[in-house]
Image 1 (spheres, helix red, strand yellow):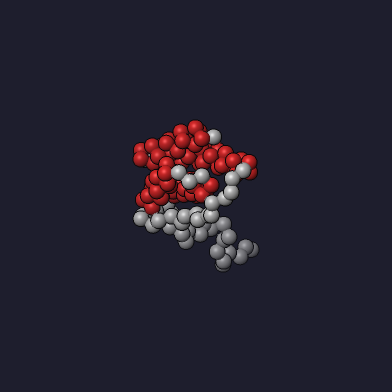
Image 2 (image 1 turned 90 degrees about the vertical axis):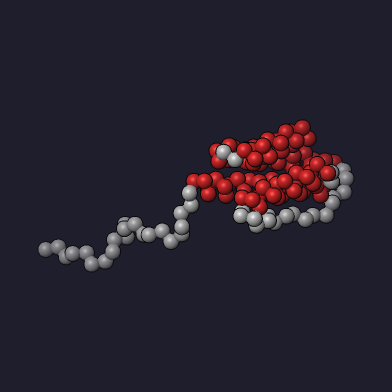
Length: 133
């Protein structure tokens, strides 16, 4: 009366083709992403307003990202310095707000990962960009 099913069901679970990552690996990737984004904003701020503090902060961020990426250095933003004026001042203020938000996200992930070094780095950036904004 009924014919047996001869093909595989479409509902059968397919073996995953990609290796799974642990929670810690996922958090490391998130942290590296937030710190890399913060590095990009810092590099843009350095192009608009060069100062030694931003240079040191960018180097610290680059080292932290490289450490999370098993020694691979992050890509860096290279922009020419812009002129002065109201538009540049508004852009700098917006970049400081963006950097503060990114540092906050990095702090949350670093705390979740229990990475004290990255958390301290993020806290310093939050303080610097809050004062600058």
